[in-house]
Length: 264
Ligand code: NAD
Image (tube, rainbow, N blue to C red; front, top):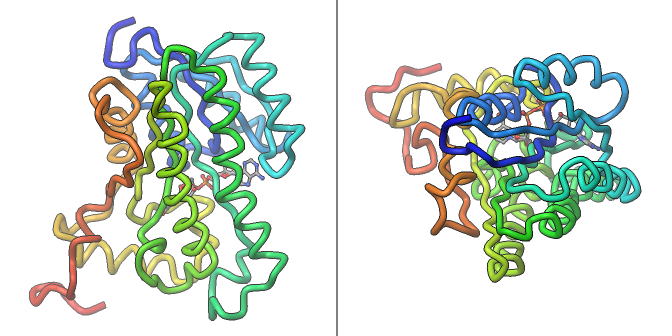
């Protein structure tokens, strides 16, 4: 195989369907010669994920619920047996009770706070540790975050708090694994219509606002995120670690609604 990722193998976590950000990343990696394994959450998703994996020439499709340590261990044991080592990891997983992705952050319950932090933050640390143990020649890890970590966005609530912790984890993991030649980065993606995003209150309004007010005056696509992930996951990003890279049509640099942007 030819391409930027030729000869490289990696695990993609968080593919649910062909709208998933993980799918955009997987397609970009495969187009550049990467060999992919996929993990899916629960039997119901297997029948969606396996055919997608097959489209990219992969039949390594393994179950993993990141809320259970034993399930993560089982995933990495299987991967260890199949491949022995990997070169990259993509973590595109997040979850919160959608009843709390609307209304006030102040109303977040303790149970949902802990569950959101567990699945959306700790899971990256938990898989990063196991993935690093399979990267004797160095490697690159990537997670997905959102601007709601840095600024208050409507309805993002506890997920924004979780993403802030995720971005901090990226920096600490970058230090932990840097001496082993392993890089850890995040892509902060603009809003994209996916299953997870549909749980966020007024998501259509948020997308429209971003489209009208970002410097590029459009929303980003799965393909945009996939293409940027190639830079961070390939040797092109060899000098980059601990970074949160915005793929958001520039939205995060804007301080005020543009004068020529229409009202919505
Ligand atoms: P998605 O619904 O396609 O993907 C979310 C994935 O998380 C699913 O595959 C789901 O199975 C998985 N997941 C949830 N709980 C899990 C568990 N306990 N164990 C294993 N897997 C679990 O939605 P997406 O938008 O592609 O989300 C991927 C990532 O991108 C998330 O971290 C999300 O916060 C982030 N993100 C999304 C947007 C957006 O607008 N869509 C923007 C920025 C960041």
